[in-house]
Image 1 (tube, rainbow, N blue to C red):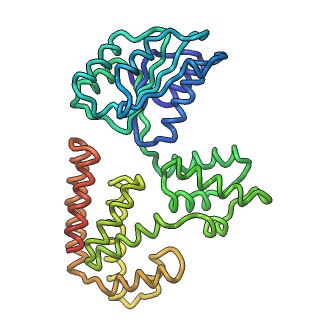
Image 2 (image 1 turned 60 degrees about the horizontal axis):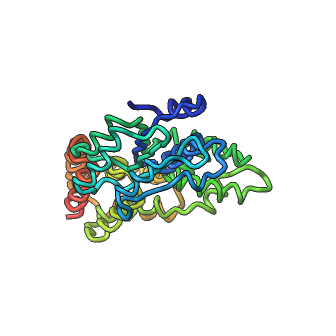
Image 3 (image 1 turned 135 degrees about the vertical axis):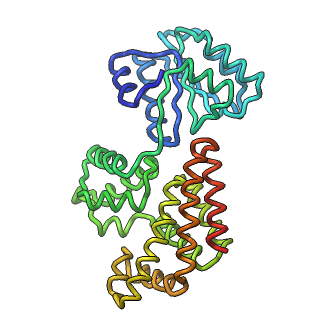
Length: 336
């Protein structure tokens, strides 16, 4: 059974709990929050909470220990809660231990399985999807991140206008854990006025991600394959989605193509307006533009279009690893 996040919240308000949940997706902040809310609802009114909740990582804990804990009766409580992570690489025999429990879960235990993604070819994954209440937590988009940021600032009794929120999301990205940390920092700095300004954002937010995005485009045009791959891997490790990275690379090349055309028309002032940010960033863009030529930009756009098709195909079959490989191949070709 699949549930939306809103349906999960509604069922918890009504006191309806399933014995098995599967929380899956890369948006770990919302996923962990849902796990906490499930735990709080299941153990509401429990005096001996510490005796009735346990967490297991199946990288280090045995599946048998996790199942044994789930089968224990709660202590002076209506329910127990068991949280299980890192079950993707279990041996077949260990998968079978979990699968048997899924077929006959204990009525007095709520078991919460948590994962970033799933290998749908595995028997255990199929069993989880068939038996659990499944709630997905995909990476949020800019609009949702802005709405969430606005709500978070309200909790912090701080305000920011739409332009400021757009800038924060642009610089920080849509990972809500990172966004939450940055908003907390901004709210603390704005404690006297309770108003976050663009100036405050400019002073306090780490622009390393934005600079990395810009650096990647510059390194590709410069043909610096080693540094381009290092920057790509750093961005991927920072949980930037492959599709978003491809969009950033494409945006850089489209901007270069437009800038080349404007220069041919003698509209240098219009070129400078293509780059948002301080003069140093505009100067860096102009240096990149001068190092590029029409043929290289055109070839880059063709390669990006082919990679876009390949990445969309890989997300349908090969998953994130396939998309990552396509990006690495693209960077190697663009920096050739």
